[in-house]
Image (cartoon, rainbow, N blue to C red; front, side):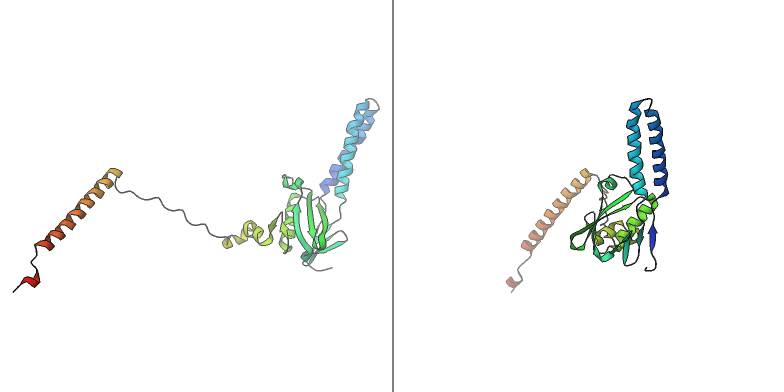
Length: 207
């Protein structure tokens, strides 16, 4: 086995909840002999206990540098092409983690991890970090980590600064008055230049 392998085991909380559901089903069965309707919740509790025991018995997941193992199944990181969360997790539920993995050669694999929320976040991060050729819920590797890695904030494109609002030293009426005076002075200056040009004697007319 390669070094630096991180192992993820199912949370013990699932086994405890499973035993509690099983005990509830036994109580309902006992009550069912006096009230037959109690067999309905007994069946529900037994089904819940069976599902939770099945989750608690999931094989350990081991993540290494070049591959990861789901029980006895070994998968290389380079084989992973897609890592998609289930609708259960997309709806906001953290545990159990259910991932739909698409591998090379059109192979598919479900990864189910009933762990603590912190461990779920950890295994999801490691899977996304090491699957260099994969997409995550349709987002390519580089784009995903550009916008989701807190350590890579300096690599994000900087947004242009917002333009500062113009500063008005005068009111709108004063600005209009200044504009009219400017136009008048400009017109007077043109007339003066023309008049001076006409009054000046022609140098060529001198004897």
